Image 1 (cartoon, protein in one colour):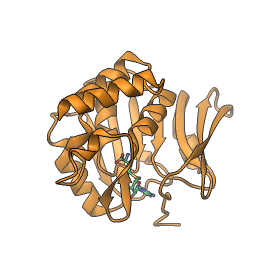
Image 2 (tube, rainbow, N blue to C red):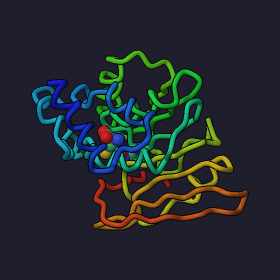
Image 3 (cartoon, rainbow, N blue to C red):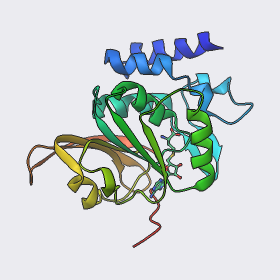
Amino acid sequence: MSFLYQKLVDQLIARGFLRTPEIIAAFRHVKRSDFVLPGMEEEAHYDYPLMIGYGQTISQPATVAFMLELLQPKLGDKILDIGAGSGWQTALLAKIVGKSGQVIAIERIPELVDFAKKNLAKYNFDNVELILGDGSRGYRKYEPYDGIIVAAAAPDIPDELLQQLKIGGRLVMPVGDEIQTLTVVKRTGKRDFKYQEFPGFRFVPLVRDNN
Ligand code: SAH
């Protein structure tokens, strides 16, 4: 029930994962149960990842909260969301950046693009573009971005992603092999980047389809 979902949001606030009013409002508005496979709606109200098929998962709510707090998306921002999966985080971002903003979401598995489209259609966002493809090198068509968020892990941050950030923009991405470090990169100048690291996460791999 929706009550259980609001309780999950309350817990994410109490545990310190959610802090920013706009991010909290987005969590309350965009229900995770709208982004899971049929029959798993009840389970969506608990804080763990769930299978969405094709070996992929909808991320754990605490992790999504933590990453969005690190990204700090704002009204009017243009955000690149790499690894759209279920579309839940895409929808959260769409709510946060609002009508004056834009979310470009990329997913490499065609069936998941369809799944995310179907899930997003439950909300009336007109600021989301969902793209089928390999986002491991970003998406140049709409660069530069205020924020880039990656929901899949790679051993290193691809340089192309850093180059597609606006000055003042941020990238949030899990880096590493088995266990990853969530890495936040802030672009402070044309050639200046500031790094922050939060170890101890586990994501599905960022797959490279081209070379
Ligand atoms: N935010 C999503 C996370 C899904 S898991 C959610 O909460 O539902 C990460 C997703 O990244 C998977 O769907 C996987 O297929 C996708 N992915 C992996 N490598 C990718 C790549 N190179 N380009 C685009 N998507 C990729």
